[in-house]
Each structure stands twice: as C-alpha cells, then as structure tokens.
Amino acid sequence: MKNIRIIVFFILSVNMSIKAQVVNIGEMVVNPNTVVGIVSDFDNQLSGTVLNDGEVYIWSDFKNEGLITFSPEQDGITVFEGKEHQKIEGNGSTGFQNLRFNKSSSEIPIELHTEISVALKAYFTTGIVSAEDYEGLLVFEKGAAHANTNNSSYFDGSIIKNGDEAFIFPTGQNGYYRNLEIAATKEVISSFKGSYYYKNSNEFYPHSNKAGAINLINENEYWVLERLGGNANAILTISWDELTTTPSAIAAAPLEEIHIVRWNADENIWVDEGGVVNEYEKTVSTPISVSGYGVFTLARVSISGIVPCNKLVVYNAVSANGDGLNDYFKIDGLKSCSDGNNKVQIYDRWGVKVYETNNYDENGNVFRGYSDAKNIIGGTKLLPAGTYFYVLTISGGSSSQAINKTGYLYLN
Image (cartoon, rainbow, N blue to C red; front, side):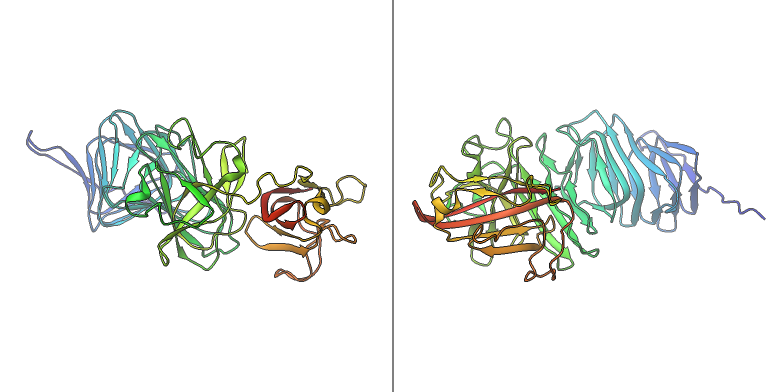
C-alpha cells in the first residue's frame, strides 16, 4: 500500500490588533514538486514537525520550537520572500536542504535570532541577514555552499563551516561584503567559525602591541576565525578593497609588504602570519597554515632587504614531464644574492610541507615536482598537479639581512 502523508496545520482567527498566524502542532509535509506559500506569521510549536521536500515561501515572521527538516535525497528549498521586515527565531532544530534569502525592503530585512543549518546551498539573492545583534548562527554542513553574495546581500554575524572542504565565509557588515576564505583541511571532522567586523580593532587589540616587523595595521576592519572541531589547521585568504573598507595605505605598493596578521591572545601582541599576494584578485593568503586562531586583519610588514638584489627572479611554473621546458622550480640570481646560503620550502594547498632543502640549486638540488623523502607525507613521489606555495629564505650575498619571499607555484 502506498504511504500517504497528511499535512496538519491550523490557522488561528484573531482580532484586528494581533497579526494572524499559521500554527503547526502536528506533522506538516511538503512533497516534491509541491509549492506552499505562508503569508501570515508561521509558528511551528514544540510538538510540530515540518518536512519540506518541495518549495516553501515565507513572507512573515518564522518561529520554530519543534523540528524543521527534509529528506536528504530530495532537493527542497525554503525561501524567505517579500518586502517586509522578518524575524527567524525559536529554540527548535531548524535544518534546510536549500535556503534562499530574497528580501528587498528594509536596511536589515532579516533578523536571525536562532541557529539554522544548510545542507546544500544558501542563495543570498537579495537582502542582508543580520545575526550579530541577535545571537543568531548560520551553519553550513559538510558539502554546503552559497551563491550570489555581494554588498547588498550577505550574512552579518557568525558562521560555522563543518567539513574538510575549502570554504568562503559569506560575511559582511555595514553594507560591505567582506569574505574570509579557508583552504581545504584534509580532516572531515574540521569545524571553523568565522565572522567579519567593520570596526577598528585597536580598542580591544592595541595596535601598539605588535611584532617588530609589523609597521601599519588595518584600522577599519578585522575578521575572527575560531577552530571548533578537529586538529587540522587552515590556510587563510583575505581580500582588500582600498576604495571602500581597507585603508589605501595598507594596499599600497610594494604589494609584497601586505601580510595577514593575528592577535596572539596568549602574549597580547599582533604577530605576522605571512602573505602571498594575488594582485589581480586583490587577495592575501598565508603561505602555510596559520599558527593560531582568533582575530585577523591585514597589515604592512617590513620585508628585510625588500630590494636587496635585483638579480633575483622566481619562475613559478613547473612542468614535470621531462620535455626540457620548466622541468624544475627555477630561481635566477640565487648565487649572486645569497652565496648559496638559502632555504626553499614548498607547501600544498592544505598547508602540508611537501619539500624543503637548503642551498637550493647547488649540484642539481632543485624541486622537480616530487615530494622530499624527508617530509611528513613520506616517500619520494610525484606530486599531483595544482597550486602550491613556496617560501624562499636567503641571506648573505649583496644583502646584509635575511630575505623572506613567498608566492604561488603552479605544478602541471
């Protein structure tokens, strides 16, 4: 016999001084290829369950004290729609397969007062979701993503990302979408919480307390990233925008001096986490996994001997196919700039060191796309194609100071 599911909900009749409500105290099922629109306030009470495998459009306030869920094999979506200001609240378990925010009227169209989760995708079509002032929380489960984020549609508050995939936190504040990106971690149980603040961090994290190489710290904005689960560390990427949020002094040339810095709460000091600059995308990444978590922002950092040797040229492409073209990671000018006193380290996109050597380019001592037998992944083997980071440290030669240079390396 075919199972038949019954939709059970009640519409309350009220006087004109109180808004009408749709109240669910039983089981409400929205089957695939079914569309439901709820214009009045929706209240799913403690005994209520909503299973959405179709499309549900909500125009007014939404409160859940029971269970909001879906069938994993289906592609249901819940849409917060319309022009009126809207609240999402309640102490129940609220999970969506897909979610769309499409609110266009007020400065802060949606207030999030509770925790909600997304299994597949959240679409920020129109409208800012504000959770920072309401203790709300948005959770992206493993494999979940988002789309359409921009300066008029983003999440203002804390976001949790579960799982090992690379992820861009759709964060923003005060009319600016300012995301934070973490690389994949290779640990399924990884969990991180990120947020953005368009504020000067100096009040709580004094900029005068900084490591010696840090010259100027961003006074307009900062990000917070916490590790909630797992032991894997992440590579961070932060963007800059000198026309809106980022002080132009931070984003000035030479771009190599733009680094990510972190507030070390144990020592009450800002520390340098490094910086690999992508000039075209206006982003800065840590060359390896961060050394800790908490508050991050951009800064200008003195690079010792920033113009120490004009003979130093790094070629950042390796084609390990033996055709005689780009067969190894080539660095011109090492002998002139360092008298052979140098170190090269190469990391994969998870921050795992795959190669390290001293006195690079001496006696055929070069990176040809193979991992170093001494590194932690073990064994000499050809590495997969992709993007890697290099860290070059040289001293001696025409410079009296150590030089640290970082950048991208492309292995084909």
